[in-house]
Image 1 (cartoon, rainbow, N blue to C red):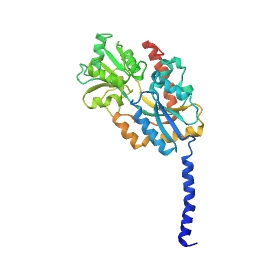
Image 2: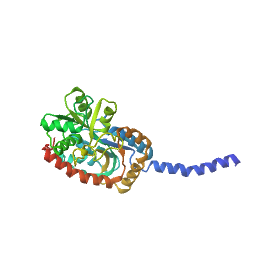
Image 3: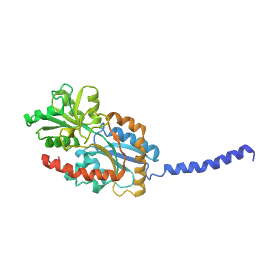
Image 4: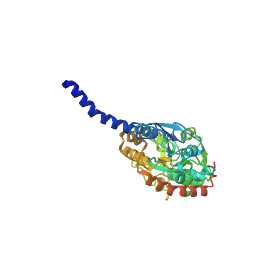
Length: 325
C-alpha cells in the first residue's frame, strides 16, 4: 500500500464516526415531517414568528417543520385537533393568548388547555393597542372616555371577532372605565383597521403586529397599550392602566404539544426553543412590532394560563358575552 492510499484510508476511518454521528443526530426526532398548526387564517400576526421558528427547527432537529393554518371556532378547531393528535412529535400548536379564552367562549368544545395540551413555552409578548384614525377627534384616551361617558352606547370599536382577545380587551376596558361601547366584530383585525379609515367604527383593538406600523406612519394614533405598564419600545404611548387602574390585557404567542409526549422529546423541544431567545432573525422580525421574545419554558406558560383563564372567564361573565359564539 502506498503512502497516498494509506492516508486516504486513515482519513476515511476518521470521517466515518463523524458521518455516523451526524446521521444519528439527523435521526434523533422520531418523525420526518412535523406539522405546526396555527388555528387562524393565513396572513395573521402569528405567521411570521411561527415560520421563522419552523425553519430554525428544521435545521436543528433533523426533521421538516411546516406550517398548517387551521382556522375556525376562534382558534378552537386547530387547538382541539392538536389536542386529539398522537403525542408522537408529528404535530405542534402555535397559538395566541386567545387560548386562555377558549374554555369559556367555546364551551361546546369541552376543551381545557391545561388538561388537554402539554405546554412548551410562551414564545413572545406581543402588546396590543387601542387605535384611532390620525384625524380622529380623540386626541388622547381621556377625551375618548369623556365622550363615552357623555354618550353611553354611542362609541363603536372593532376587533377580529366575537370572543377574540381584542374583543375582550375592549370589553374589559369599558367595564373598568365605567363606559358603554358597542363592539363591532370583523373577520380579522385587518378588516377592523380598514373600518377605522372608512369611518365605520370609532376605534379598534389590535396587536402591535397589526396596528403599530399605522401609528408610526402617521396614518393613525395609538391612544394606549394593553400591557400593564408602558412598552419600552414605544414609551411615548401610555398604558391604558395609567388612566384606567387595574386594566391589563396581555397578548402573547405560545407553543404546545399534544398531552402525553414523552419527556425526552419535550425536553429537547423546550431546549431548542429556549435557544432561540437570542435568534437574530426572530429578534429582527419581531422588534419592529415591539414584541419581546420570552422562550421561558413550560412552567411560565402554565402559570400564565392558570392566571388568565379565570380572569377572562370573569370578564366574559360581567360583559354578558355569550359563550359558544
